Amino acid sequence: MPDIDITYINGPDVKALALTDAEIIAAVEEALRAQGEGETVIEPRVHLVPESSDKGHFNVLRGYVKPLGVAGVKVVGDFVDNYKQGLPSEMAILNLFDPENGMPKAVIDASAITDMRTGAMTAIGAKYLARKDSKILGHIGARGTAYWNVRLMDHLFDFDEIRVHSRRPESREAFGARLEADLGKPVRVTDNWQDCLEGADIMVEASRLPEPQPLFLTEWVKKGAFVVPYGTMSAIEFSLTDIMDKVVVDDWGQCKPGRPFGSLRRHVDEGKVTEENLHAEMGQIVAGRKSGRESDEETILFWHRGLSSSDIALGWAMMAKAKKLGIGQTLKFA
Image (tube, rainbow, N blue to C red):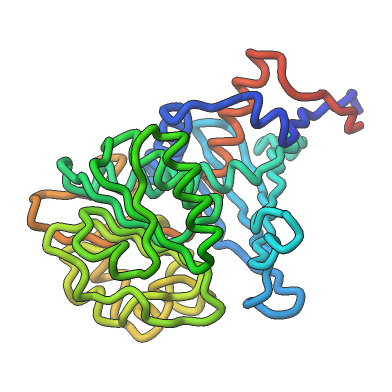
């Protein structure tokens, strides 16, 4: 057997790579286009729950992106009380493989990848589904993915007003301060859901609830808004989909009945949102096979669960940049 080396990119390496906002969005958009063209394999995520889901669990995502010539598996822990130990709530490892022979190609600290690709998915959804003149963002949640949601959407829209809220005052204040420093503009920190969301052009819900609770009220959504609820436990009213002109998902295979978790879980399991009345998957829109927003009057909801293909594409982009810049380590595998 020939010698086999693998690339190892650790957390400091990922930081040193300093992927730009445009590079992050482009990598995830490329993977979505491949999905829309039928050139990906996306296995529905599976979960490992060591004790109880309200404490934390592991997500295992698996996929293949044909245009990139790479397959991958990501394991990410999601533990809500990690802040008490000074740890991020989500930490992850991404393994990349040659899909022709199964040879390992890379091991990458995917904690930042998880945050970046989630933010990119939200931003790409807004690119195709929000009004082009959207100027007010309301965002619930302050975890790592929340930062990239706001940062990457502001990169595309340059908002006039950004409102944020999260359950813990210290969390939301720190989140607002970080965004102000990085974006160079004021951020309004609110102490309740209504002041954060009501009347916003783009409404994002990325909360961390221990159990489903309808805190996001349908009556706060104005005509023409773009709504992105993706908390693990649903925070929306059952009536929210009634006012939507289009409902879009990232991957129906991960949203269909019988899967655990997600903002629209009850809607799907009780037959309110079905494969038949769904407008499209996001990849179909990016690939031009389905329409995005067609008028300023449309009210549109985008529910994303997270795609292995996005992780793989972003990891692959990091590998390419690391090779160019001489960042990362080569490890002996065999």
